[in-house]
Image 1 (spheres, rainbow, N blue to C red):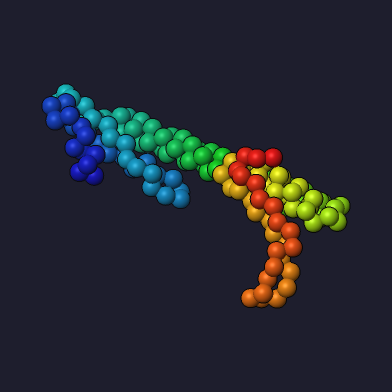
Image 2 (image 1 turned 45 degrees about the horizontal axis):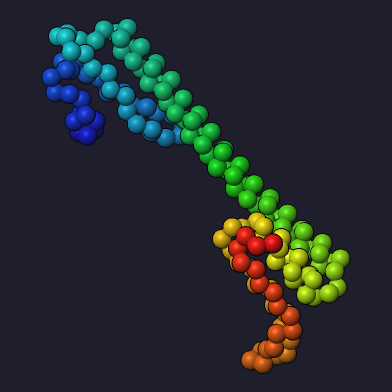
Length: 144
């Protein structure tokens, strides 16, 4: 609270009321009402200030919910794109038997979804500690 009062110019307020900006779930802040003339706030003023702080709380909560919904929508779009990529790769696995062609197709599709990731696909044969590369392909980010 001292930091809120510190923001009010010293020579202006004569009287001030601080109202909490609350929702049923959490406190969002405070709303300060100040007057520069001598006197007190009337009961109608207090009722209006209380109503304004309630309306501000609802508006802030709506804005925060809207931001959260937009972020969730972006997250869902990223997940959708990842699943689409996996489906395309799966379809190529099923449709293509040539390993080099499969790797190239998968690498191109993967690289097209990311400007920063350079995919490398390799098929290894043998046993652990004795692997050999049967087929491999790599693309630079953005190549296709």
